[in-house]
Structures are given as C-alpha cells and as structure tokens.
Image (cartoon, rainbow, N blue to C red; front, top):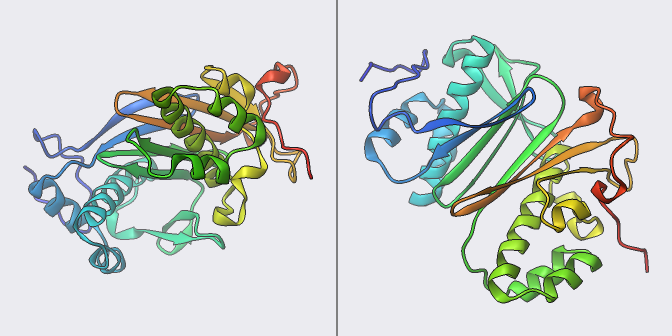
Length: 264
C-alpha cells in the first residue's frame, strides 16, 4: 500500500483497497461503480483524503451513512482529480442554489460535470467534461407503503401501468422509474423544488427499453437523454443534456419522448 497524504490522491491498486472501478461509458460520459461495503482499511484511507469540512460533515452521520459518504467522496476526489490533473489539496466542492455540487480548483469553479448517488452497498459516479448530467441508483429491496409512494411520485399513465403489474414486477418497475425521475431532476439541478409527479418517464423506457429522450414541460428547449441501467441488486439511471452536447433528437421516435400529465 502506498502512503497517502491529503495533498496527493494515489489511485492505489493494492488488493481490496481500490473500491471504485469503471462501470459504463456513454459517449463522453463515464460511470464509475463504488463499492460501499464495510471495510475498515478502505474507510481509514478514504477519510484521510477528505478535507476538514468534509470530515466535519461525515462526523454528523450515523455509521452506515457516514461510510457511504466517506467512500463516495474519496472516490469522487480521486476521479475528478485525475480528470483535472490537480492535487487533492487544491480540489474542493461547492454547491449551487439547490444543492447541486460543483468542483473547484484553488477556489475557482472548473468545467467538469459530475453526479453521485448511492444506495445500500452500491454507489455510482458519472463524469463528463460537457453538459449537465445526473445519475441515480436504488437498491432493489421491498418498499414500505409502496402504493402511497406510487400515488405521490408517479404520473397517471405510470400509475395505471404499475397497477396492472404483479407484486415483484411492480416493485422493480417502480424503482426503475423512480431512478429515471431522480436522475432527470439531479441533472436539471433544481432538487426538491421540482415535482416529479408532474412529468412521466419516456414510454420507450416504461415499456422495457433502455433509453429515451425527454423534455421538461417548463423548459421545452432543453433536451435530455435518459438511460435506464439494469444490474444485479440495483436499478440506476443516467440523464444527460443533449442540448449542450449538440445532439439533435428531432428524428427520435415520439414514443421515446417523456410525457406530461394533463392539468386538472
């Protein structure tokens, strides 16, 4: 194991200590998977990479959320630092109006987009140099009060389709749609100010497809690419800004476009 200091991020490949690994690539977007299972050596190393404010924040969490934060934040520092070619001590993070994080080098915001999500022992970090993006991951486990959750966060077509499914299929589909909605909201950067029941996931994804194109009703000039990610034990989604990336979705099948509930 290499010695680590808060001034330098070492991408240590020692067995058992390198807890993040490449997962998926979509164009210029890379998605990294982070292993959040308990491991004292990893947690000690990760904690050493954090700055004072991050350690203070971690200290306010109970053990499991603390582990998730420390391991994800240290992996984020390693990934962003490598992308920017900067020292760990020069890297910090700020937050926008609605809590969306951004990277700073020597106190100045830099042009790199990223998004972080974790659930259970699964963490994902999406990174790109262009456009806005959002990633979300949810462990597939039974949900308490699933009917109430569906009523609260799904649109009318989504609710009708979920109601027609069996118990296990319904749970999996709910989590799949929920990650899509969360990824879109995270990419937009408006947090809880956006009502996720006011829009619906593209029909192509709702009917089993892996991708679709989406526009928020109040921002019709912005177009988003949505990827539904299936993996053992969790569901995830990645949303990216096609408008900034210069892609033209005009020839997309209309069924791939997100729909919006009628106002009543």
